[in-house]
Image 1 (cartoon, rainbow, N blue to C red):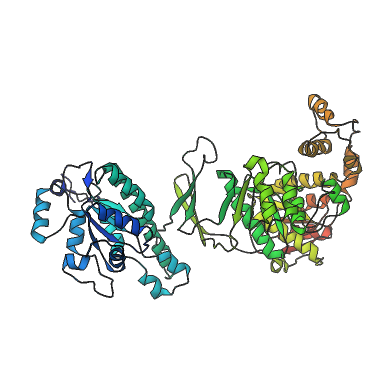
Image 2 (image 1 turned 90 degrees about the vertical axis):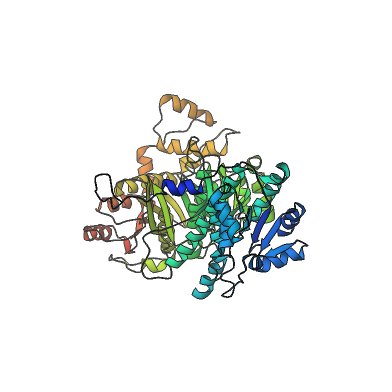
Length: 627
C-alpha cells in the first residue's frame, strides 16, 4: 500500500475498497420472509417440532444425510442438498455443503442487481434460514478419543455455513442452537412468516460466539498435540448464571461462566450465590478436596474473602474443646468435628463464612451449621435430612452448592488485569507426606500427627493470599496470616490469632458468666475482646452488658504464663524464611515443627535458629504463592 507521497506503508491494514462495498451494497429490509431453509444438524433435539412448523408455513427445506432422513420421517417435504447442487456428497461425507449454490444462496446481497443476475445465471436459490449445529468435537476429546478420531470430529461445513449466514444477517437467519427454535417460531408467527433485522443480528452474534468457542476448543486441544506451542492462546467463557453484581454493586454486568464448554464444577441447589461467595466456594472446595486426598480424613474449611479463616481435619474433640467451642451437647461425627475445628480457629473472622466440606454432609454437621452465622456451603453430597436443614437456613437464602469431585480442572489458568492477559499452569501440586522427607535440622523426629498438621497448614496456605503462613495443632489451623508484604509480619499476625485461640482455654475465659439470652456470636466476640483487653471506656461499658458478673481482668502476666503451656504447634510458610526472626517469634507460640520451601541465602541461619529451639524443620522444595 502506498501513501500519496510514494512512501510504502508495510503495516497498513487492508480494507474493503469503495468499489467492492458498492458492489455488495443493498438496502437492508427489516422483515425478511422465510421461504427456503437449509437444515443440517448433529443434535436433532427439537427437530420434530421445528420441521412440522416450517412445513406448515410452506417453507422449502434443503437438507443433508441423517437430518434429511429424520425430517422425511416426520412427514416433511425435503430436497437433498446434493440434488439441489447437482454434486453428490463425497469423501465419506467430508464434503456436503461446500458448494457455490449453497454459499451463493447464503452470501448474496439481496436487492443487488449484479448478485441477483449471477444467482439467476447459476441457478442459485436464496436461502433465508439456516439451522446448523456442530459435530461434538469436545465430547470426542472428553471421551479420550485418539488423534485421528478427534480430527474427524472437527466440523468444517457447519462452521462455514454458520459464518456465511451470520455475515449476511441483513437477509439470512441463522439458528445454531436448538434453544433458539422457540424464538424463531414466535418471530414468524408474529411477523407473517418473517424475521426482523434485530432478531437476525442477535442470532448472528450468538452464531459467531459459537464458532469462536468451537475454534477455541479445537485450538486448545491441538496445542496439546504438538511440541511447539502457538503464540495465540484462546479460552472461551460461557455465561451459565448472571450475577447480581461483581465484587461491588457498581461492577455490572457480572456472570458466572463455564470455561471451554466444560460446564460448572458444582450444582446450585439452594440460595443465590454472589460473585465473592463463588470465589470463596471454588477456593475452599479445592482446599478441602486436596486435604481429604492427602490425609484420608474428612476436611473442612471456613472461608472469608478468598482466604481461609480456618481449616481442619476430622480429629475427635476433647471434652475441654467441646466446652470451649460450645458443642458439648452436640452429636459429633468426624465430618462435624472437622467443621467445628475449622470454625473455631478464628471464630470472630469466621462470622458469615463460606464453608467447604470434603465428604458428604451428615445431619450432625448440618446441625452445627444451623446454629452458626454462615452464608453457604459447598460439598460433594448431602444426606437428605441434612440438605433439608441447610435449605431451610436463612429462610431459604443459605447457599448450597453440590460439588462434582470428578470435575477435571483445566491445566492452564488465564486471567486479565489492567488490560493484560496472564496465563500459567495451575498449581496442581499435591502436598502430602512425601514433601516432608527432607528434614534439615538436628531434630528429625516428626510424629504422624505432626506431619498431618504440617500437611494441613501447607495446603491451607496454598489457598491463602500471599505472603502467608499458617499454624496448626491437633488437626486444625489455629492461626492464618494472609496477604502481608513481610513474612515476619505474617508470622506475627497469625501468631496473634494462635495466642487468642489458646487463651480461650484459660480458666478465666472459660469461667466468664454471661447473661441469659446473649447470642452465640456475641459470646465469641466478647471472649476475644476480654483476651485482647484493649477497650476504650465506652466500649468496655457496652461490653460489660454481656455479663451477669463483671469479669476480673486477664492480666498480661497471666496471659504470658498461660501461653508458655502451648507446645507441639506446627507452622508452614508459602515461601522461604528470609531471616531467623520468624523462627524466633514462632517459638513463643509453642512451635516445634516447621515446613518451608527453603532456598534462602539465610537458610543456615534459619536452620541454626530451629536447632537452638529444638524444632524439626523440613525443606519442601515447593513454593506455594497464591495471588
